[in-house]
Amino acid sequence: MPSIKSALRGFAIAGLLALAGCSTRGAVRDDGQWAATAPMESPQAPSVDGAIYHDAQNMELFSDPRAHRVGDILTIVLQESTQASKKATTSTSKNDSVALAAPTLLGQAATLAGLPASSALNGKNSFDGAGSSSQSNQLTGQITVTVSRRLSNGNLVVRGEKLLTINQGQELIRIAGIVRPQDILPDNSIASTRVADARISYTGRGSLADANTQGWLARFFNSKWMPF
Image (cartoon, rainbow, N blue to C red; front, side, top):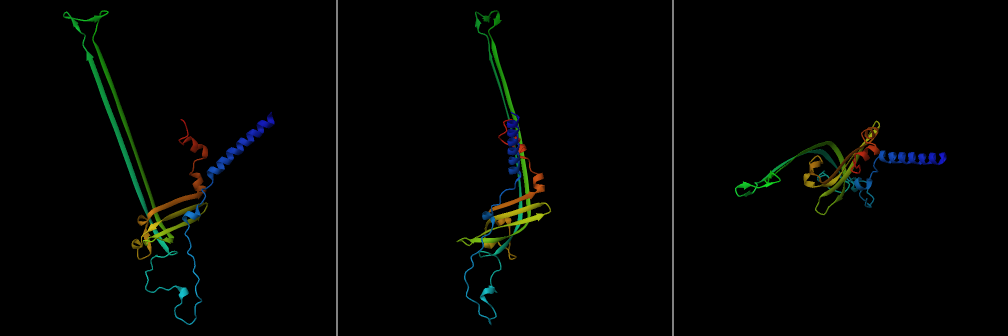
C-alpha cells in the first residue's frame, strides 16, 4: 500500500537524521573531572577594628608566594612536543633443490616406459615486507589552574580549564595532574613537562570543527567494521 510505504520511508529518513545529529553533536563536558574543587570556608571570628592588620585579609609578609594550599592558583606553561618514528623491513628467501639419479641395472640406467627413471625437485619462495610510521605533536601556551588537593607527601593535585569562544568556534583546553612544590618557579609557574600523571585535552567545537569532522557514514566506511 502506498501509505504504508511512505510511512516506512519517513521513519527511515528520520532515523538517519537522528544518527547524523548524534554524530555531529559535541562531546558532553565532564566538569566533575576537570573543574577545581573550591576549598571550604571555615567560620571566622569577627574582626576587631582599630588594628593595622586583620586576620580576614590573610596577609603573609614572610611566606612563599608560590602555590602550596588548596585553592591557590598556579600557572602551567605548556611545552609539549612529541615525535615518534618507526620503520621495519623484513626480507626472507628460501631455495630447495633435490635430484635423484636413475638406478642402474647391469650397467644400464633403469627406465620406465622408455623414459629415464631419474627425478628432480626444485622449490623457491621469497617474501619482502616494509613499513614505516611517523607522528609529531606540539602544544604551547599557558593555562592557570587551581590546587584542588594537597597530598600527604606535600605534592599538589591541580586541575583547570580554559574556554575560548572566537567567532563561530570554541577552543577548550583542560589539564590535570600532580606537581611538586619544589618544581614551582619563583614566579608561581611550572612547565607541563614537570606535571606527573598529566592529562591534557585540547578540543574544538563549532563550525570549523564540524567542517573538519567526517560524517557518520564516512566514518563507518573507514572503521574496522567495514568488511572490505
